[in-house]
Length: 611
Image (cartoon, rainbow, N blue to C red; front, side, top):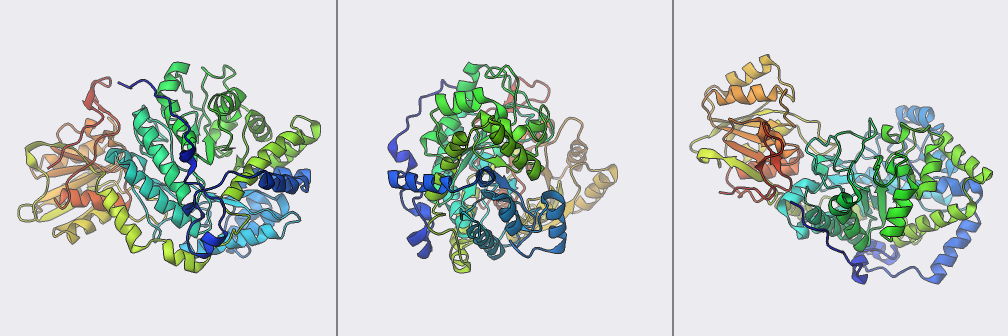
């Protein structure tokens, strides 16, 4: 069903979205990426090489690491965060982390209390950069985060939140993907973040994939490639380094690399056809960085080392075959997939030998830093090799304007983050993503005259920090604002019989029910909930709020939709479709296979009804 891979050329214009510097643009309140970059000059390279020559081996090794740190402030976090930092890192705060280890980057997480609100994030970024200037050899830090949107978003409202990758894949609009990425990049830039670990370039060809799923644009390699290229250009036009992940492709696995070591059993030809196109497109679009995957691909490395530690994959394929010379960053080194075969002291050394430049978030920084330094002292790694990696990293920092001006301001945040224009754009983009899979008997749209009173039940997935929710409440509120009388009754992802009975009783005199489902399996009690609601004879509208495959397990449903996420922006769009305020515009970017015949499509890619 997949077409033969086309050759993607590396046109010079592909990198037109990258930034050369942030000084004057920042002063004007614009992201550095609003100007086309110039290739680094010989003078720039010479300047950065002189900077590298001033570093001690300890400082050079430190620059290779991108680390987590707890706290909302670089110097004065809450006592609980100080305790967490002391326990995990042996320092009290971000400033001490930089002074002790000379790290080259810091990654923000909501659970680490880095992302309370945009002003706080900007202040934390400024504090980190101020600490960087206090080093013996001042080098600005590359601050990063995972802001994929959809189900992976570290920064919540009032920042603008967009539909995730599979929802955008359902719209099929490269323009929307690029616009969403550019706005997201501009907002991250305003908060002092210059690298986003997005977009996801995996092709999700396995419905059982537990870790990628809706983080992928879909199952068609060429369609995914087009969307990836659009987002790469968008993020980098917004001023931040994009990062395509997870090389060489995490889309066909049923193991989560956070907790195990997945195997990808594609042949070399299958990889060329299925996995390679999005990464080739990202490189052609001028991607600043690429993230590795903790997966085994025996076709490329019979040693069965994970790709993060595989020289045949990272150097042989990514560097030499695909011609990529940008920054390569590992996925988190705290994930089980990269720790299964080797100890924490060997992993960072092997990653660097394989072709990695940046080491992301090892579980024990003291062990990892010491191991790399020892490998350097023992000659397993050479200083020349480290200098090549450092030059790539510093060139990226130069490109993203960090040497010109690493700071931001509250005024810049207020001009850019969560503006009315951005929020309106997010809603309009979301309106083109909701997919109507089934509508037997014209159940949808609901009518305010015929189904005025609506019950909303189902799964209340934990939304990313600050992204809103819970889903039943968001849907009920949105439907009420659209003229219905809607009530939320969360029943969870594993409803008990008591909860099912409560939902049936609550439906009572109400006219219709919307049930939010979440990754329904053959053994899921969500099936019993839906069946019991159908038995009432009332109109039942099923909305899949994560993977779109649920309807295959729900044969009796007459009206089924997919929103591809439970975040507010997508749920509000689904509510508008349910209410008939907008028409469903999404088309399945993955096939939905029959539950009783998994090799047969119930709904093929491209399926999507409308009113």
